[in-house]
Picture (cartoon, one colour):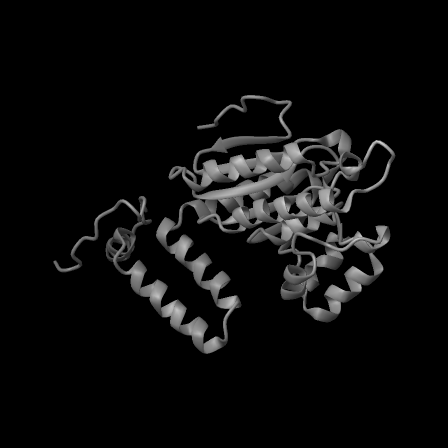
Length: 279
């Protein structure tokens, strides 16, 4: 079922299709640049989805020709046209906090990058789990072009995804790269023709949404938490989340489906009671 959007003029739209929540940045005239209203709405939508057990996968995309052109600096200027450092710092901290809430969602998040993702736009992409990009999309950091530094993961997250030398290349030059150039770097998983991007994102999200909710949540946790730890610690964390998942009803459903040679019908692992595997 599709959930109608309540306000088509809102800076962030949400529409649900079955178990997939679509988040759409909706400031096309401003190339979906980040302002306080958009950030606040994005945080509200993320919180709603986090507590919505009917949602099992998320897609983030945008209206218009850009995905997100970074921060809307015009809204951070004084009446004299000066940039107030404290205002910018507060904005960056709030954006980073909201991006972090998106990254922490206990469900897979897919970015469907329909156009330019620059500065804060690429930082938003870096908080997603999987990235699909239109053949027409371009991505880059861009902060250096205006004498700025990133505040939402453009240094720390980017270097973890593409490595330090490629991260410095993007950061120091401020250039935009095509989606095809970004794919070998690991920034993009799939490059898709522009007119097929939404369809492909929907197909992938729907496929993922059929998987065990408990396994998805814990797999994501094991990967994300493990990245911050030495290998030996990461392996111990992996063992812990695997042990937790074994108490999920989804494990029993998966084993039953295997025995019966059928497709599993996974429910909410958080509410299902474990069943005995003994016949």
